[in-house]
Length: 297
Ligand SMILES: NC(=O)c1ccc[n+]([C@@H]2O[C@H](COP(=O)([O-])OP(=O)(O)OC[C@H]3O[C@@H](n4cnc5c(N)ncnc54)[C@H](OP(=O)(O)O)[C@@H]3O)[C@@H](O)[C@H]2O)c1
Image (cartoon, rainbow, N blue to C red; front, side, top):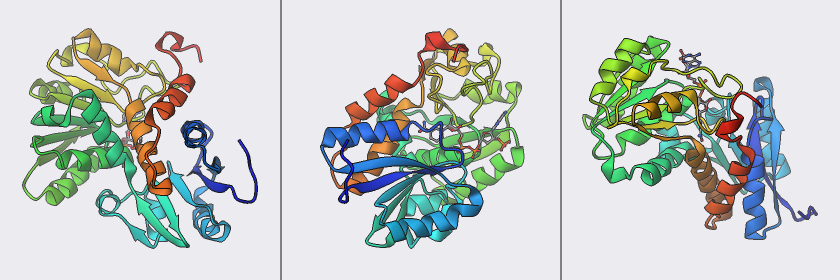
């Protein structure tokens, strides 16, 4: 990679940021596009967020991805946010348009692309269960409200009040198209809600490396062969939740496609060129550990 005075800088801000696979994924894409760009990770503590965003203007950084814990706090620091980001109230991509900072939420596009590839948007079931009520769940529930056939969403969360609040907010936004309720994440509630559900999406970090022996649902008997599971975790490639669901005949996908497609959409916003999705996917797959390595990394 050549770095000179004409190199365009893009990157990711987070705290911490060391775990992010985005630098490898985006630099592989940049190389494949043959452009004089460079993607860097920036560790930014919450108290430094405003200075970092101001620095983006000052340094002429072309674009930034925004990850935990800044996705919501960054919204008020921008000049414009897209309708999707505004609905989700979180930004994961900033585009610097000559000093005007625009915010987007490409996680919405990422989950829709993952569902399109894995299941087919036209084949999505009427009822979907989402685990978690944090930033990722917000984007996922919003994305699901835009899918015609999805009429019933149940959000299961450890803190039930957060699930109820998110459900009320998103149901209001769906204007009667989708019924959404929030309940506590417990085995028996999951069993009842999953009985009629065709899709389960895990938007909690439970089971993510290094806690690979944990699962947000610990009992395999709640799953069934009519169910598709999308676990947004991509490290490890197969989570314990996926193993439990697969043992009952459910079809399972991890979060790799979501990661790749949200990144591809960000790159397209910055470069106005089609992102090399295959290259990006290969770069990420090279880094994410194999299922056989579970517990060893
Ligand atoms: N594939 C992708 O591209 C992609 C993109 C974004 C996120 N993700 C995944 O989504 C995960 C969540 O991200 P986020 O931004 O939504 O985080 P977040 O805002 O911190 O929310 C975390 C959610 O998980 C729940 N949770 C955390 N620890 C738990 C535990 N031990 N038991 C039960 N529930 C627990 C929290 O419940 P409480 O409300 O009770 O605290 C909350 O609902 C990430 O860790 C990542 O794996 C993947």
